[in-house]
Image: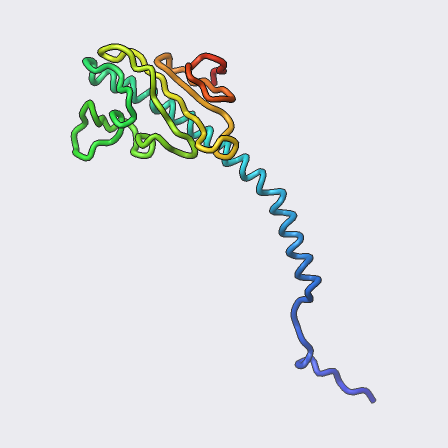
Length: 164
């Protein structure tokens, strides 16, 4: 007669091969998903940059209407928040602090071409902080309020660019 099998003494768990197979499957899934995640992140950063340029255009129009003797703001700080409750021409409170700092969502924003007194012209550019990582395209807008993009850094909006 055979002895009954004592199941309490039998070891339970996964073998090394089973664990290696599970780890390999996870790595394959990660290799497929991570590039898509990075592309999605770049697309989101680019969409945020375009939205920020729209905000800057609207803020400049509001600023110009509010302070006609100054004209356009021509600095992100002038459009940014004010520590006190009342807005001034040096801190109008028309854009948030992140955008006023010049960097937002993987893009850096600069203003140039401020001409005249009062200022009658401006140009904003948005460039990725890490090209190819935080974004692929460069964006610009000017007093025409048309947002344009290019594949390299632009010195003048409208030169080698495509409207969005």
